[in-house]
Length: 293
Ligand code: GUN
Image (cartoon, rainbow, N blue to C red; front, side):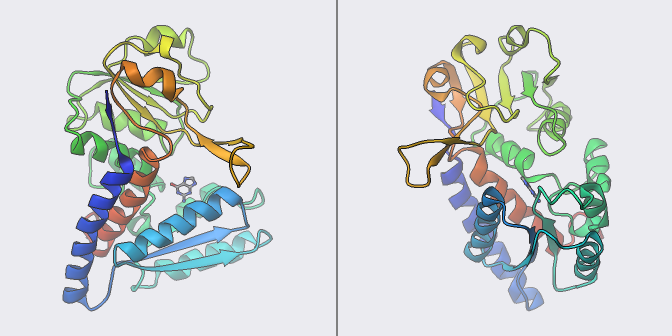
């Protein structure tokens, strides 16, 4: 069994991106610039955004964090997005999700200029990805693809089972793994809450990508020997052993599954750190205008 060390790969990639950011600054007189909007004070969102801002510093990017109270109106938020769309000093824009219920998530996503949509959530980017055109690919699937590359994991002709059909992870992941590329060229099965006898399917998987957000869902009896297991779950569960009062659990029962795998990602330290570098990579692509021109 080989552990896929996302934290280590993140450090490696940040160094690479940082060198490119310096080159960009020498050429254009400014650094790649990511803007993040955070609405309200959800604990997990605060942590994610803080990690994104810190990663920008490490990679020699500029970042702007815009915070709003949870009572901000939809109109005010959309106007801010439009203002950033028109600001030529900002290359990428993300609005951290979830946002309060009185604001339409879809309107927010569709108001972001696809050229600055470094989260890859805009239908234009999702559609372009589906037909294999250059696009911003959302951070978690892009991070997983990068791990396959960096660990030289064979994907061609393999049976890849994706569990979870979210717009952010499961759906794009299933498309990317089926594409005629490396990584890709897999035969893909997408499982979800209505899938019958899921174990009979997971037992056929050469690659298992688990993204349903249910702590320790995947147990050893659901995995065949030699499977590559990618755990996307990060659920906060109560713990009296930590100062914060909670700890992070993946969707995979790591202790019993790991010994059966050829490769496995831990939680934390697997997929999570890679999502951050994917966001930076997309921001660099946006700054260099490599996706749209
Ligand atoms: N909330 C959870 N994951 C993400 C993400 O990748 N991007 C944004 N904007 N919000 C999120």
